Length: 239
Image 1 (cartoon, rainbow, N blue to C red):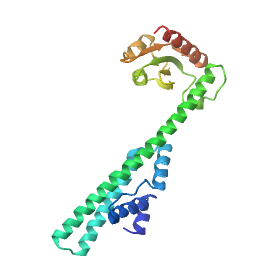
Image 2: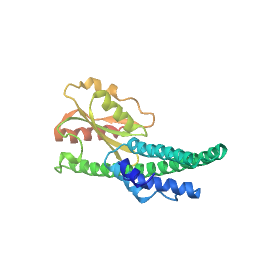
Image 3: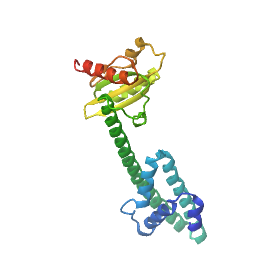
Image 4: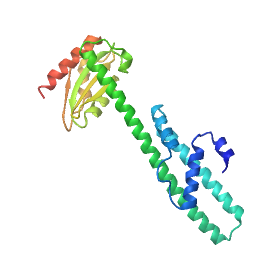
């Protein structure tokens, strides 16, 4: 595996991954930390919406390429069969342990970046919602949710609250906006279709195993977004 292989791979981090594997083969030890380039690549992938499976496949394909190169190299050495077998066994184990370690570290970096991104977006959306509830005009794009919908507001508590709300949105073919508020509560709005019958709404929400669910009435537009939420809050005060 040389520089031309790195260029042909079409993956900028290919050379860094191979260098790390070579360190493991030479020293018997994995690099002490994930290289900066791999950490930056994992974070960028998360920010750009690239799934982890795509990045993971790049690592696994690199492992495959390196394993094939090792087999070819050992074959060129024309060692005794017993020695060749021992070399291949040691090299295979070293490569497996290295890639297991580097993939785990890269996934941690990816997950951390994704969590930071998600938390930042949720914080921004909650701030926009609070402004809207206070009567401050906002740009719809800040919510990632259409304010022109017929809105069903939800206020909920419990570890399973978000899952229940998302499941209900799916059942009602509604667009959900789900926001954790502090550690105990969830505020949500479901953008209902015009043909959603009010009688179908309660059945879409399964009973919470850990808390409660309070609903407002389905109401239209910006005013409906606010009023339905006030109704849900009033209902929640009785739970």
